[in-house]
Length: 289
Ligand code: PGA
Image (cartoon, rainbow, N blue to C red; front, side, top):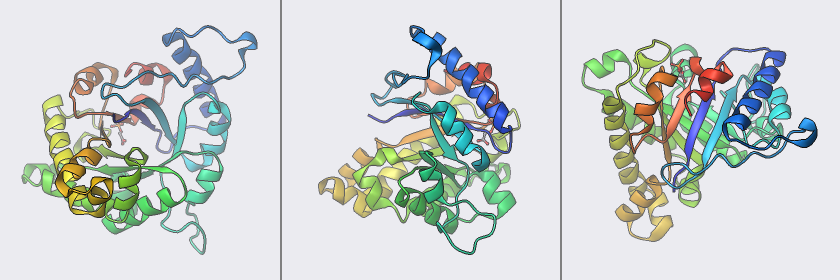
């Protein structure tokens, strides 16, 4: 019963007025697509009926917007069923951390998600596995859901180390929150984003992505089975680890576009997409649905 999640990562793009305009257009087009009757007076309304995902869970749409656009975005999408997230948080929620973002504040502003460990955070801003573990914990403690990004570089793939790298990022990133995952696995999602596919136009083939997703889910089951997540869920470690892992959405990200999304989305272990470039315009993002 895991969710299918379409997530936009706007990165450092859009002004407040561009964001508002985007959401107004997007909502209108989404409603058309869902064939909803027009609202009397055009007021915003709940369109949380995005339908059932392929694995029995909800179909959710999440926008990771720059922190400075969370308030504006939240105002426009309120009551529409669209969810807003921040692209980065700090490991603490307050204190002497000049320039950082607090997950408590994001949550108070109405955000529902935090993105953690994106490869740009890791490579440009020096985010380590230890940071991702702490950030996942802090995000959940603030009441947010958290999406952990994992993915290998081209050199790591060519050296045959891709699974080793993503397994390490996965286990370290989730190491401090196995108890929360056991209680509510839907508060956590994993995005597999091979670094060589991000922003390059070189998308992983459905087979390449699916191979890693299957390996990630198996590893997740083993990891959760060994941890208290598995035992808390039902007693016997390995079986319960499998059950908990089956509830966690594994998204693919890296050059997802309308023309390659369908083939990727048909793979049973791919539970949605994390999308950069193609999420910046309503038509290209809707083209992924
Ligand atoms: P892209 O970015 O879709 O532009 O490749 C994906 C991401 O960085 O999350």
